Length: 272
Image 1: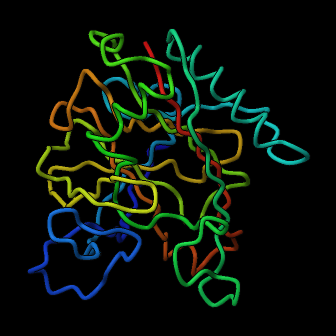
Image 2: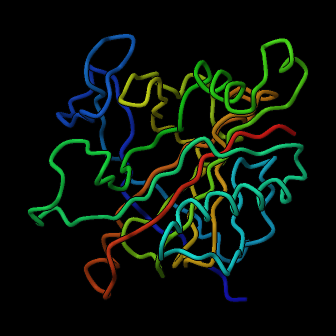
């Protein structure tokens, strides 16, 4: 197989109030300051995971890329059926005791110059999240997992619990707004800024040179990315969380024909 070429992309990261950036992520508020999250772009090298598909260790890296053809992604009640099938597949893939999806989201990108493009956060028109983040937080995730799996605090003690996001394009290849993921082994507690938003407590990530980012180039609807957002046996400094973000591959968008990204993500609670 021919060697892949890294991509250089601009990703948005959380920055402190003292940073000169005037860009705000108005979707959420920093818990410590009570102010809208300030973000700024940084150029980051992204490894192409295409040569490694099917070989990545989710436990070790916090993400994996798998070929998974055959999903029905349109028609009547397709979302409900897809969520059920994805949860069952993940349970088998992980050899887990139980996997239950607690939500799913479909994102269909609308061009910024389209009158239909939402000017504010809109749950009916979710757009790609163009900022480095982790779904939920270390405070909120354990409660979510216990409630979804029907476990009391006592019953959850000594169990390995996790939240894993199954991300899939609805069409491909994805050139516009692909998803990039960060090697969980390169993340530390201090990289996380806690926020409050429409969904509750969230986690946004500051730029660090030690981070190692990657993406699956030209991802199709027959492929999935698995992204671990919480692991009860590992904190953020032990590889328990995987930052991720959509990004704009500007050189390709300007030079190649493409369709605006459409994708579905299924967030699952796992009992190993």
